[in-house]
Length: 325
Image (cartoon, rainbow, N blue to C red; front, side):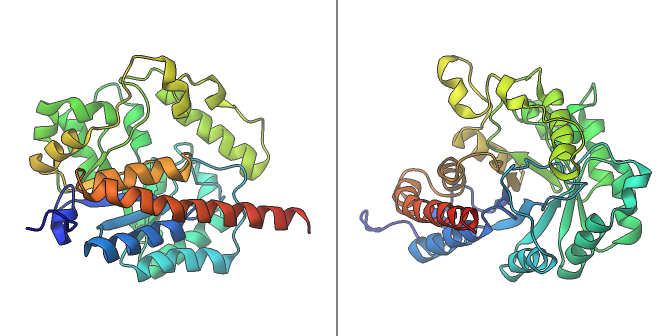
């Protein structure tokens, strides 16, 4: 092998045989696709992104809402979902609010988006069994994933708990703290499991549940105008990442060695978070967890950083244009 030729095909992969679920739907899907294209051109390797998740501003969403997100037209929503499918990626709607009441199930905007997802072959992430059962009854072709939010509330997460999730959902997420419970991980059903790679919280974060609950409240404010924003992140000592500069505690993002160990254990689907990260931080994680780390990753990230810069400049230009109208 010529040491001055970049690795090609699967030799450019960090974890051959792995697949990924990534954020960016309704946020920066175009940048995700651009990154996939550049990696394929440079390494002859198609990063296996299986799922792309996110949601427009509708009642059932409980993803990380960005206050400045635009409202999408019906046609724009459909094209965003269909655009992922055209690339062989399943779009996942983050309809993960845990506080869904029976009266909420008739929400016209949410049902319209669900109908589009079913039409194109999309899926949904939920944390409400009520919503899960409703979707199964009315949109039977929609793939249903259990949100990581569900794992924040039970007092005990053992093999039986995860086996129950595996029976009740098409996919389930391992709680990030449990990524270090090797005996438990060995016992879990792996064919439907999803492992979060880049969790920014510290181990056994005492505020995790309150954080998820704050997202529900902020959701109501931003979409329905009910109540006041919690400003939870203003009080969180660890998120965003820049707050961690003064602590000696490690956050629980996996090292690439830990990720590879989980792949060798039999896990195949790995999830990246990052909707609140600046794009440079997210794509740093995306590329380091997907590409071989000695040559491929350090070769690719500086190149793609220029695409990120161009994306951010275009976004700022569009924002200014909207402000002058």
